[in-house]
Image (cartoon, rainbow, N blue to C red; front, side, top):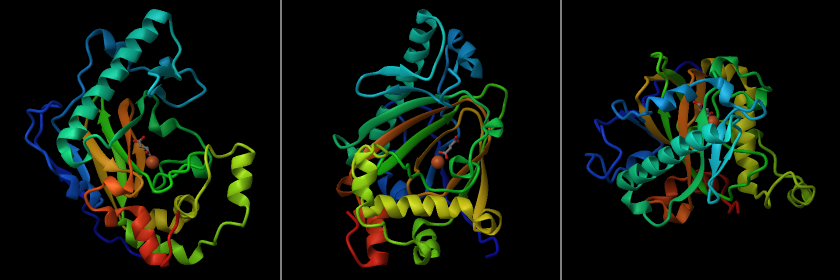
Length: 294
Ligand code: SIN
Ligand code: FE
């Protein structure tokens, strides 16, 4: 496969997170598998908060500092009680701003969008060592072994908060349906009883459906395919500091090649609550496989 053009990043002029910004009602754009990019929408840190732009605040066990909801508990950071309080306030402010922003962009999701973890990623992408399966410098769709989604959507709001001019360097890839067609012929059905087994020994939090099985296989097949990584359809995208971008990461092929200091908010949405449910990975896979997957 030679490099085909990939052109899925759409830029918008917004400079405000609040309700007064110009862009709204763009559900169809994001559901179509495009990346909404806002190059003039920084998440502003106070003078005091700038000290957190240092990977020494990470506790060394997890690569991200995060706030879990609905508890609001801070995880993955080390410091004094006062430091952690200030760090948490920064992350919580990002959660509030990105939620208000998402609901302005996507009014159809009002009352339906659920807040997932909010994270601050202080570590340098380039230095992150890991196994090939965890290597996010390889193109992939997001699917996690321990967290079956049952078709639920994964919407993410990222913001590059680097203060040294360093972009978040991404690659993005082919549309989801084309990607699914590429690997579906080599994906086998789950072993009967395996969903029950991995749940009962605690690998998954709830039952892994065939949808989850296929999504994990897509994630793994893509990351293991070095030819696809090198020569598959793709485009480089640099998100400069001060840029916010919004993407369905369970649908859009992406890879992070470089950068440091980023905020990220995850939202969950049921397939039925999309404006066009037929665009979802679940419905796309069901169409291609001619059977229900959950
Ligand atoms: C990812 O979601 O694969 C990584 C995104 C990033 O760290 O920029
Ligand atoms: Fe990812």
